[in-house]
Length: 261
Ligand code: MLT
Image 1 (cartoon, helix red, strand yellow):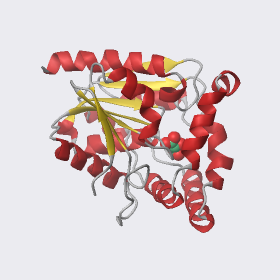
Image 2: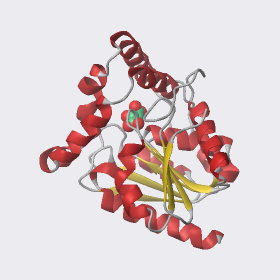
Image 3: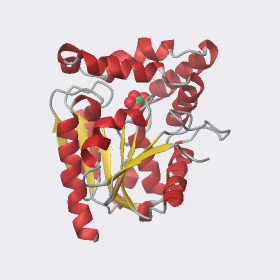
Image 4: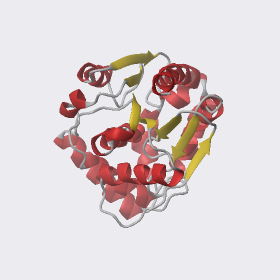
């Protein structure tokens, strides 16, 4: 399985893993701003954007191994690896399976805990509906309204429109597969204590999907983490407040590049 990715710039590699049910298109502002200082690699995860879905059983480990294979293909040994929400779950799986390749990690609007039984059942119901309907109507009804925060809805309608377009273009089969993969993900909170790499945790102050408590739990459990709270943003900090997001990531990744050169 070879993931499609957009890869721009030179310098310390910075791999950014997208949220559900979006694609590497969500990282447009990061590619534009951060490629002046870093090599920004933004894959389309299995089934999304330009990447095929393949035949593997749903698993965040499979998605993390896809990213490792992509780095192999690009000749990248170590990178700053970051992800937003689902991308964060995959970043944590990548750290479990390929820790020696992680220069630093960025965990944005995500959580390290596994799903509750209720959340897991909800994901499996959503996966079934996606497969039955063969459309993403359920995502537009149930998820889209919670993806961006009230400030973005009020002040930046164009951003909401862009996110809506990205959700509309998600393939239903890939979205169902990813929901099953997320439902099966293990709890990663306990294992955070073993991660020696520096970490940046980012959280949108208006996020309704993950909470500040989730962000603080990760930052508290990681031995070497800093936490950035992003005002005026819901769940999609990188899309809703790109400047604040980019500044935090650039400062973090630049410090790592200096210590590893
Ligand atoms: C995401 O934004 O990637 C999803 O909302 C994550 C999730 O469903 O837990």
